[in-house]
Each structure stands twice: as structure tokens, then as C-alpha cells.
Image 1: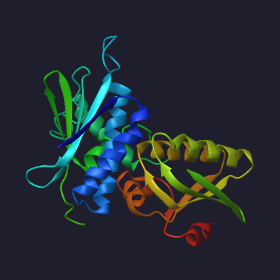
Image 2: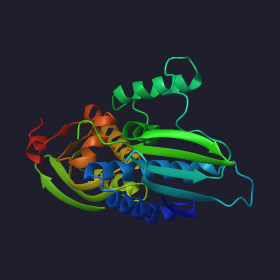
Image 3: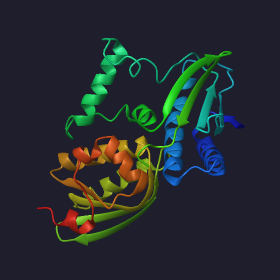
Length: 158
Length: 110
């Protein structure tokens, strides 16, 4: 599985994108899947760049690593690793949508927002929503790092 | 991102080409503000040439549409393709804003 590690800043976005799209093309992904890979990668990277190191101690090396390629079952996968404090961007709400937790309430708000009109539509939350709509995300804390894995199984409707 | 403006009766058609991502999305909002300042309250945004959009693009569009509406104007979209059409659909923007298949249909609105 190929990997690229760069500083966690917006200047790194283009290089990560190029890297992931080249790996995706090499894995033989269809164009519509490549489009989703590109979108989910941007949303996940921006999340790391803006938030992962917000509470990190000074002197912390603010880097993010992307590895990608096909899993053993042939499904294309992106993995993003950062070394910020533990943070699970995709946990909670989707796994247990109706348990009354703050995450579940946030999810209900987001769903309501999708139906809102122009006067009531709030601008936030769309990045994580797109990640969950267009990939299968999973989070793990491993060896002091946050690892977000994003899988792209072939679309049933493609 | 590249912009092309064409006046069509009461409407200003703003054709957008390229990528509306984290780095470029603010350009759209700035351009729409300039259109409004020039007296164009009714915009038809033609996205036939837009190859890519992320949540940053959606935020920029939402903000621009709200400002136009507050000024008594409106913003419609046409000619979406590929991932742009998919992102509009899943994010609910198709219901939030007028989205038409063709520029002609967008201009035919009252």
C-alpha cells in the first residue's frame, strides 16, 4: 500500500489529491468512483488540517499521512493518519442514530437541515455528511495516532 | 475557476468552469457579490463546465444565495453533470435552490 506523508496544511491538498487519484487509476477504479475518492479525500483532509492539531501541544509535528490502495478483498481504501489528540470524526451518530446522545441529536439536526429552506439552512456539517454518504468510514486510535479508513466498495447502482 | 457572464433579459447567466474546492470556493461568493453590486439580482448559474465541487463549494453557494435573496433577488442553477450533480442531490441542494436541466429552462422561469 503506497503512502505519502506531508505537513497538515492546505498547501498539501494538491499533492495528496494527485497521489490518491494516481493510485485509484492504477487500481482500475471507474471515473465515478474516482470522483468520490477525490471528494471524500478533500473533506477528510480539510477536517484534519483544520481540527486535528488545534489542541496539540506546541512543538508537535503537524503531519498527516495518506496511504491508499486495494484491500485484500479488492475494495479501494484510503487511510488518513494524524498524530493529534484522540478524535473520532465519524463515530457515534451513524452507529446508533436514535439513542438520544448529543451525537444523535446532532445527526437529527443535520438531517433536518437537509430539508430546510434557504432561510433556515445552516452552512455546516456537509463535509462529514459527504464522507459518510460517499464512502464507508471507520475510525481507530492506533499507537498514539488517529487513523481514519475510508473504503469505496463498487456502487450497486453504477 | 473561470467565470463567463452573459446578460439574458432580466437574468445574468454566470457560467462557471473548473473546480470549486476548499482553495477556490471563496471566488464564487466574491463573484456573486460583484454581480449583485453591479445591479444583477437574478442569477442563473450554468455549471456545465464545473468538474468538481466539495462542501466548501456548497458553503460558498449557500452564502451567495442567501445574500441574493436578502437583496430581493434569486439564484438558479443549470446543466449540472457528474459528481457536481451527485453532490447537489445528496446534500439536498436540489430542493433548496432551483436546479434545472438546461440553461433555457432556467431562463424560462418567471
